[in-house]
Length: 334
Image (cartoon, rainbow, N blue to C red; front, side):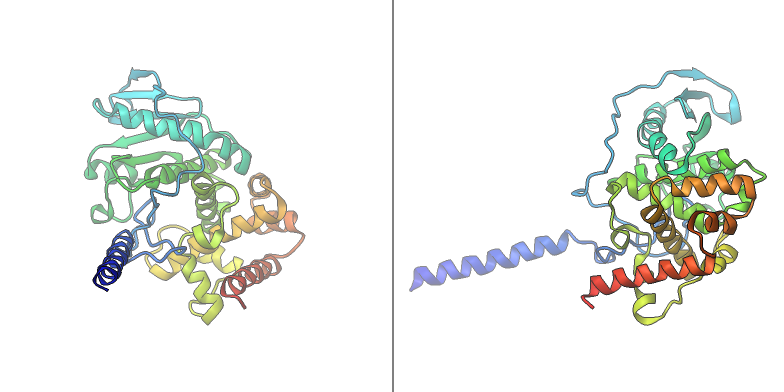
């Protein structure tokens, strides 16, 4: 009987210890499938940081052994530069490794994705690597101020990419995803030009950046409710009506520029990403690129969307909500 007692006691302790290890491995602030807020790009709202688990490898492999040629430059206060085929990195002496890695992500992971999903391959987009918070906030004209900047952040105002100490953030995949995201903004800016950027609404601009970031990280068959930024709000809206989902025209009106109101900021990004995902899932991988091409000609995103779908923005917005409801119902077993 003693032997049995010791065996049972050992098994029980083992289970308890194993359970403790599993719980310790979880971030108590992150609900699986509903990524938290992240201070990346222009996302400067509060909330738990988005986590990219180490056990979930990036969908794209980057060869960081490639070294891009360096040369001296006096441009914009940066002493050195490295050039790829689509992007040019400007950096300070001693930051060569970060410059090489940033170019590797954009050249190896970004160029083909941008060409495929945006219909355009960028040329000569500048990438500036800041080594201090003050420098980053100053050159990037960052709207959130110094208090909202952390190592590994990035932004892309006016078609230029600004990075603050990339690859010094320890969260796996965070920096690579952020760089791909900002590359989308810079590519769209270069394609449309400064005068026509205002014709693509912020929710589609951000939505496309999140969408391509997710394709880079998870592969083209990613689950939108598992990956999309703050998809928990989208689920809550379907299940409880709070917060209320916005129509496409509302998104176009309310989702431009810096958004200080937290829920609106998360909805704009979440609904924007789901919209771009649904457009490409329904009409093919090149569908969003066709919208950009049409916007460049018509200067009217509603008309470009209607030309693609054959529906008004109101009708197509309802299709997206119906699709979202179907996915949430399926997820809930309804």
